[in-house]
Image 1 (cartoon, one colour):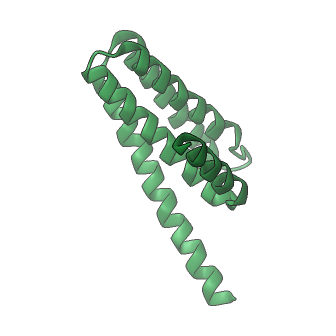
Image 2: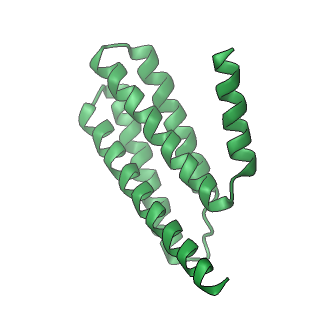
Length: 129
């Protein structure tokens, strides 16, 4: 029952989120899966490591798909996402903890920057509205 309640909560959260909040949810999910993969690598649970890294890679793919390539920053972000995916691949197939930690650090930094951008937009909307 608890699992069903969590899934319902997550579906509700995703279906009611604004686009900026959806991106934040993606970043948070990616970080969560990478940290779970990290723990699995530490405990030598290679199947769990593999499952969680693949989930993180799927989220990175989703983030890449949503980029508007009309902007220079999107081109830079795409290159960064490709690099993160390469790092995750190395972490997964070569059991490279450093690559996984690099990915966690980069996505965390992106998420934190996104949070700040959302705050700025919210403050501007409050001032204007």
